Image 1 (tube, rainbow, N blue to C red):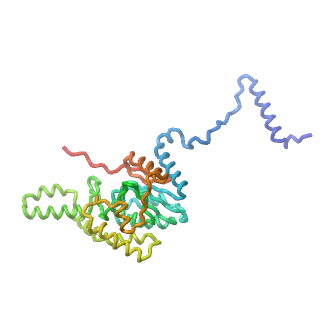
Image 2: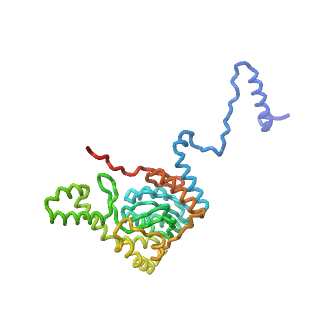
Image 3: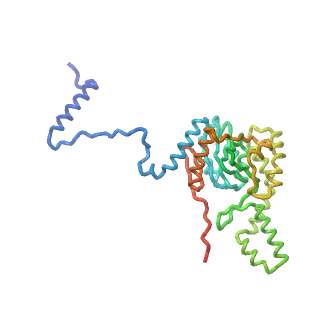
Length: 324
């Protein structure tokens, strides 16, 4: 005779089924609770939240696809480079595997060169090999950051640029090159000396430029040579001889010869200097994923720090409306 305290699983289920069937025959008796069966392919977020964040999840899906295909960690920075970038970049790589390669999709108009060197060092300390991918442009501080990489991946329209420190105007947030600040002030001083009555005009035109900013611009320009060396040294696999050779090749096109922040320094120019640039065929899977991903950031027209699990999106500073 079976022990009722140790009946088998089938017997327990059978007895429960009979009890449920009997209960259903009783008028007004509550029906047995039904546990919904969820499709495991559905998102685990709530429907509304997932709908609101759908674009983010779509970008992160492409990031994951790239990581699987190329066995690396991929992070994205679309922003000007300033001191706050350090914390936001650390959020992307704080738990990176130092035995894995790190790829950075970078698009930036420039910024602070000192910060760019710190970002390059942070990236190199968290990976086996560091690759910077430039779908569009990485100017000034972006170029400094790229100089610290093992490889720089460039497409047909990718562009680096002169090492020209950038400053944000206090009222608009607009980026202005140090060379442009100094040139504008020097030109205004000369014109005012020739025609003192033009002082109110030039004072109004340069109202966003302070004496401190001019001094900072001059100091930043004086540091560009040192920043070039520090950026090259941030790659721990470069020998002192390689650093010196690259410095000599890069100093002229990136510092001395460049007259405009927008000067072109694409694959052909970079390859001649000996930089570890790679021209990526646009028809390859790698560039197809990168360009699809970049197009999603371009369409949003915001600033981004994003990875597979971390994401920060911020609007660009807006110029104030014109006053009446």
